[in-house]
Length: 107
Image (cartoon, rainbow, N blue to C red; front, side, top):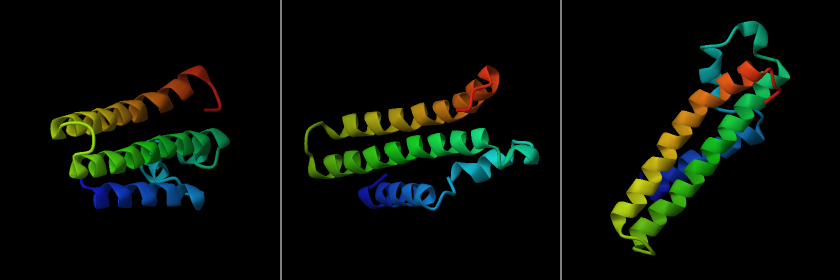
């Protein structure tokens, strides 16, 4: 992704947190009993997930800039780091809610 695309994703993600409507919540509601939608654990879990996505989108913005400016690494390294971050975040997004449920923690 380019600097603008990653930057818009990062800014949008952070704004959803500022307005206390984490973007992951809409997706999570598709797989969660409606009686849990207002629970502190559900909200906190989605705040954490959205924060992780915000961090990754922000890092990818800087990586895209570094790639564009040929700043430090060869271009392929920027791509590898960027996609590794995205794949890791997808894995975390799938793992973390199950971890919270399994351990009965409040996220």
